[in-house]
Length: 172
Image (cartoon, rainbow, N blue to C red; front, top):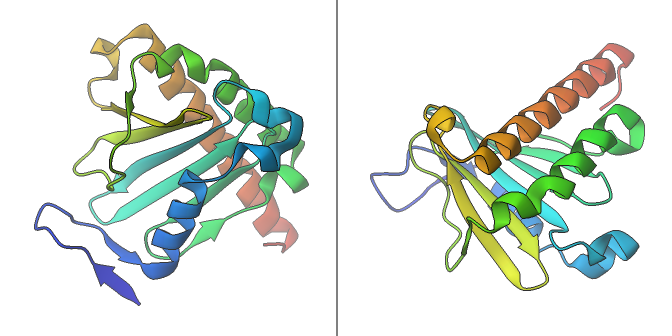
């Protein structure tokens, strides 16, 4: 069942499961990642508007785990367990995350994005930091933002390729 959020600025209908999963991803504890949880940035949660009614939230962690969750309740999880090709771009994204962390602000609130902006959340032991990226003006943004944008686009491609392989194999 979809939930209509409060404001007229919000176009996304979301399921309760999506909101719960997103919240869990945003508050994922570093200690559950073992040695990978010692990184300056141990995880990222990126809200990516796909079109005016579809929102994708990608969660990625320093151990290479990456998941996709959609506002309509659909999800794609566990790809790193089945496909080694997902782990490298995930780890590369997290390894480069500190480059953009210096441009991020502490996240006092964690709303869903409005319009075309992507919200990049950095999970650190000092809390959650947030930086917006506009894909339409990314060429005018900082070099660090461009790098992180490119890296999470590559991870999305790896996840999509893994998803197609899973579908072809009849799994997940």
